[in-house]
Length: 275
Ligand code: PAF
Image (cartoon, rainbow, N blue to C red; front, side, top):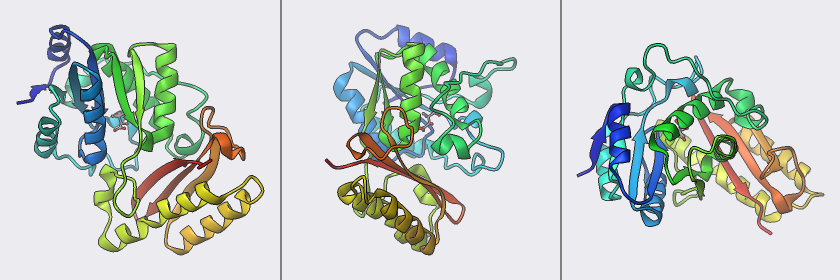
């Protein structure tokens, strides 16, 4: 059975009692097959795997979905057990951010574009929680999905500057049969919205498989029209350099990034270009 840890002291003690390499998979729960893939990768690479489940209030804006974010702790523990994860850290907000907590960790440079331009303070919330988790777990390897590619880039930068984890491992996005990227937020979609959502990976695939530097702009313009006609409200559909996240038309080293809302659900996805 998985060990459940709820305080920072118990996390620290558990970590120090382990021999061998430690893999760490931070999550906000509502786990799905995409998370299971991270757990399996960690289990394959490391002697001991710790996951965390914490819906971090610092990364939600005032008008975002903190209250209604899905919380499925029992099912999550069953999935972690199946993946043979050794321990899960699942603190309350008060246990994780005790009274007096006053520090923010912010990684400059990559956080003002894409989701950073639309979700003020979001990435500071992410780097603050991840730095604090890393400080207690001190993992040899920490695992993050490529679905949140900007988050992964920012955490890599943070860990270069403050190397609290031995290595940051990015894991490819898991997709449903129709290509939709797996996400805890997909469960907000109605049946009709769920069918419409599959337009996103279809469009990203077409562009990444067929665009050239000279056709890219026109393809992006057409894609924006198609998405809007299907009922999406776009935050962005952009092609950016895979390392610097600056705007790019050099498809040999770029990814396409999208964030779009269907009703009240915000979906994100990204893909590399096919060479
Ligand atoms: O990707 C997530 O689920 C969260 O942003 C993370 C990394 C667990 C931090 O709260």
